[in-house]
Image (tube, rainbow, N blue to C red):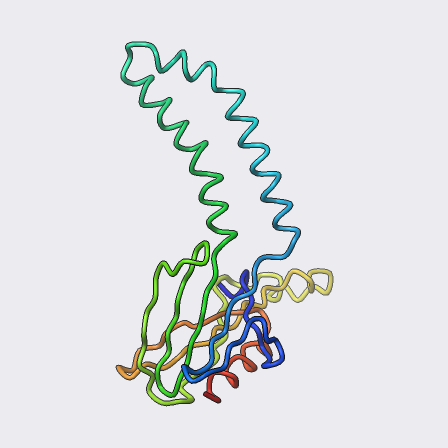
Length: 189
């Protein structure tokens, strides 16, 4: 989620890094304020849509046709689930905790742990950064200087090598330098 939820890259970021006897814990940053504006716009639009269709939906549900009732329930579920799932996305946090050769990744929603996994690592410094590009770089292939800004540069992924030899995706970012700093922080403890 590193393309959306950024992690701290320095020990000076005291509000996002905890260092204690349990090791080091990196806590993801929330979304920028502009995204909260998007959220309020989404909520206003969905609320207005719900108000606009409330009357016809109640009339349609009161008919004897089963298909109409199913359609009303599906539409009501959509009107309820769209803002709910969006709000859950905005209150998502990811924690990376590392001590020696143990890595714990915890996902939280509304400050409650939803999912947590423990991974034994190959060694204390078992991290590597790989470049990833999932689409052809058409702008670069055409060698047109006007298309320079449209070249797909891909992104970088930080992996941890587990004891069983498998790679575990820890974070990803468009900036390799940030992942190198996170790699150094995690390897240190």
